[in-house]
Image (cartoon, rainbow, N blue to C red):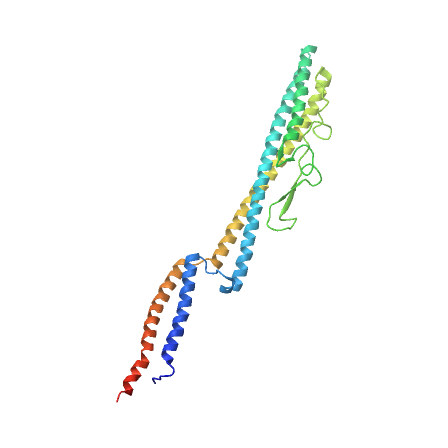
Length: 282
C-alpha cells in the first residue's frame, strides 16, 4: 500500500544497491590487486595461514641462499685441494727420481731446491684458500676446529634438520697437517722414505676430496628439496590468497548487472510518492 511518510520500496532498493556496490567494489579491488585477501578482515583465518606460509617461504629462500654459499665454499676447497694434490704428485715424482742411484749430488741438490719451493707453495695455498675472509684448509677456526664450520640450510632451528657442520682437514705441510715438511730428497735413502710419506699425504688429500664431494652432494639434494618445498608452499599460499581471475571476472559482471538494475529500480521506487499525488486530485 503506498505511503507518503515512508517510502519502503525505495529504502529496500537503496539498501540492496548499497550492498551490491560494496560487493562490486570488493570485486574490483580483488581484480586490480590479484588477491582475494587484501586485509585481515577479508578472511582472518586465511590471512593468518597465508602470512605464516609467506614467512616460511622467505626463510626457505634464505636457507637456499645459505646452501648456495656452502656450495661455493666447497668449490673453493675442491680447487685448493686439487692444486695441492698436483703438487704432492710432483713431489712424489721427484722423490722417485732422487731415489735412483744414477743421479749425482748436484742433481739431488736441484731436486731439493724444487722440493722446498713446492712445500712452501702448499702452505701458501692452504693459508690463502678462503671464503669471505675465513681460511678453510689451514686448520684455523671455524672450519678446521671442533665440529667445523656451520651451515644453516633449513628454515628453523632444529640442529638435526636445519643445521649441519663441515670440518676440513689441515693441509699445511707440518706434522698436524700432511706431515711432509721435513722430507729430504738430497740422498737416495731419505728420498725412498719420503715416497711413503708422500703416499700417505696423497691419501689424506684424496680422502678430503671425497669428503668435500660427499658434502657437496648432500647440499645438492638439500637445494632440490628446499626448492620443492618453496614451490609447494607458494602454490598453497596462492590458493588461499590469490584471486581466481576467471571466477572473479564472472562475479564482477554479475554484480555490474545487479548494480545497474538496482539503480533503475531505485529510480522507480522514488517515483512512487509522485503517483500518490494522483489520488489526491479531486
